[in-house]
Amino acid sequence: MHKSELDEMQLQKRNNIGNQVYMILFYLLLLDIGLYGFGFRWLNYPMNVVVIMNACMAYYLVRIIWNKSYVGPKVKAKSLGRRIGIVIGLAGLVAGITSVLLKNGSLLTVSTEDNSAVILFIVSVVLLIILAVVSLISKWQARSDE
Amino acid sequence: MSKNLKLKASRAAKDMSQKDLAAATGVTRQTINAIEKGDYNPSIKLCIAICRVLEKTLDQLFWEEDENA
Image (cartoon, rainbow over all chains, first blue to last red; front, side, top):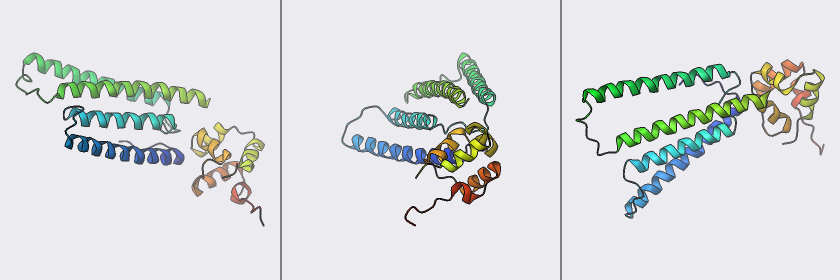
């Protein structure tokens, strides 16, 4: 991760939110283990852990964006756009490589019983949604500053 | 924490907006706004940066007289 460009108040808020979300994640995972011990399975492993982690990550991002602690004072909209462009480019590259490997049939020997494809798909979709929301809110933040 | 009206007055006297002061001190406008409203307690480093930009001393901007004294 590159050097943080947040100012001191933003850093303080981000750290507070990070601590809170870490505790929420910890207790949710503990609760999940407890429920599992009692025989209540709301989702099969590892989907339950992935869902909890994604929910906490999304909550963390939404809260830091809401508290205007995601983009620092020196980051301009241009660099944010460039960053999103790089992520989209990398996603395209990974998709291309995956499709080539699938065509060659070299991935077909891998067992698919652990729902890894679904997890990968959900994580990618969540990441893209978060990026879109962050981009929109950052633009809204920059506009409200003017 | 009470509002920092001295900071607001000094900024206005220099004909600077919150955004101008924020840019000069390297923080966000929200941080300057929070300091003026008394919602955020700035570090000594930021206090000094603000004092330098507004050409005031720390006492002039951030010292609060005890009301009971």
